[in-house]
Length: 129
Image (cartoon, rainbow, N blue to C red):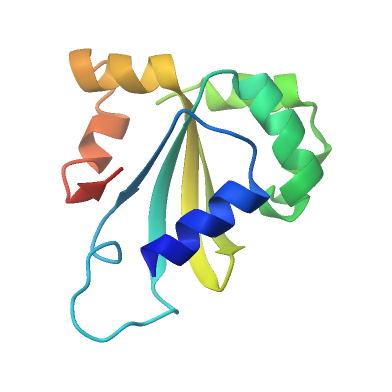
């Protein structure tokens, strides 16, 4: 299942520096269930550029008024709190996913220094790069 989600991400999303899958759906626990929600964290080098490209490819992932904001405005919103912006209940390939976008430097900083514990706390589960 994870291989299928990864292929869909690589084909349908802008490039990223790292993709981290985490939580119970990532690791086989018996019977395969495509209705389970995959939790993903996408590390990007330039959030403004990434949102610009992702709005072109996956505008439906941006809820409410978010899809009408500029990539710079979306990135400013992302940088509040834990420096990540999450997109819940998205279809990636045949699977339901929730994915978060964070600039790689912010991801590394939170993992090293626990600035907000927002991302470090999410990754206190089994993960797969």
